[in-house]
Length: 455
Image (cartoon, rainbow, N blue to C red):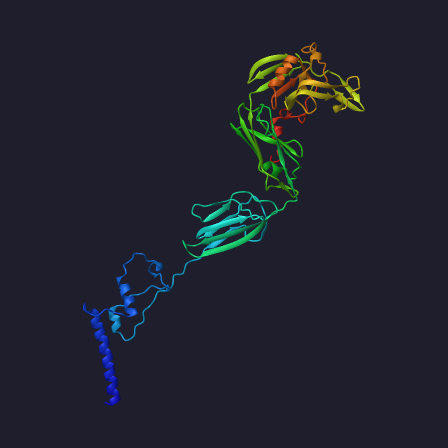
């Protein structure tokens, strides 16, 4: 053996001996403490308490390294070269955010709810704002997985949606920003009601009336957006009076005490011809006691029934059996037979024959202030006080078509009859046109049902 070989063997032996001695000393209870950084790390790892959490995050130290430290077993120290494997860093999933309507969508209905969903994951924040930056109200699901707008949007406006969500608690946030634009109609249509909001109680004959400020081209769509809710429930239906007006009446007179709500939920509804509903509206009214006055031309008497019981009789004088022709216009003074509904009333009403084509200076013309007048037709028929015809009342017809009663009876009638109360005339030679005022009850129920745009 050469001197070089001997020297190498001697050095190798000394190193091996040092390693073995170190291994033996480390196992001895009287050995000196280890002072190297590696030894301190090994000791700390060996003394760490055990944990049942199997998540990779549970073993990650708070220091800069994101890999867990694996304790070095004593046997490995006797090996000439052994690598210490470290676990891979935890990879947290990211959340998918779905927004409806999608980004850049045009012509969105303003009544279509905006919906946001985190799939899977939870929503950290959702903001829907109008062009002025005002937030739109919305509702977040209890599990924070979905959000939905809770109020209608405006026509022809661009809205912005900003969402933040994460797939796990304290996980990385995913952010989404999108926008969409609502439809811009060529025009809008506004609904009005009768009874108006100022009228709280009406009679058993009152139809519920919706008047549009412009004719809806699509009557079916307009009618489909209307509803009547009655408590107790009442059978009834819609009938188009003209191109802007639609009536709802029961099959029979209302039951006293019924509470009626009419809703026109037309906002966002395509009413045809590029027109959309301007706003949703509703009204509620209560049906009062049943008040029905029946007038028989044969007896010239009015009989009044309150809640089905006869209350009183009143002598009357109706329109004279006469007609005149003025400028080619035939004017009849006969009071038409039919079912009338009270429309309005006046303490004093200025009445003019010229309103229906008869000049005030003609032999039968007039322009007078009439007291205690209750209108029952658009054509100008009233029940009113007529002290000048008391001698004729109950005997003959001498009026221009109105129903004359004595001042005392007129005071009572004016105080007790109002919107929706019923006056029925029988026995005269002409018939009331159904469209003259609220002549709804002069249309047979089968024909009434045919007046619906949805029939």
